Length: 141
Image (cartoon, rainbow, N blue to C red; front, side):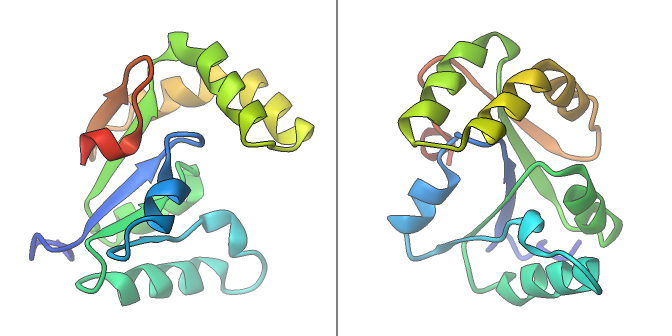
């Protein structure tokens, strides 16, 4: 495995769990979001940027986008999934509103809440951390 040196851990964390906040307050953490890699060679460039941080950053945070997860899984990169319990939908709605996310983002997250969370639960190639009421990613690191 690429991160077997136990220096860098890759966390695929659900929106609103505190990835950006943690990265902004911790210089050993980076956030690499798959959605920013659009167009030609997007998978190649995404993988290149993740690998470039391996062994440099203690924490790499990525989104739970299935395409991005698949790219890293296919390369043998260990991933820890972090997501909330399904019943925390309203708590996360409040988080999205509080951080002033666009309405279309909020609507999409709420519409597919259970579908996307249930898809994550089915992933058997990685460790899972399920957040409870009031918990954030930083409390689990």
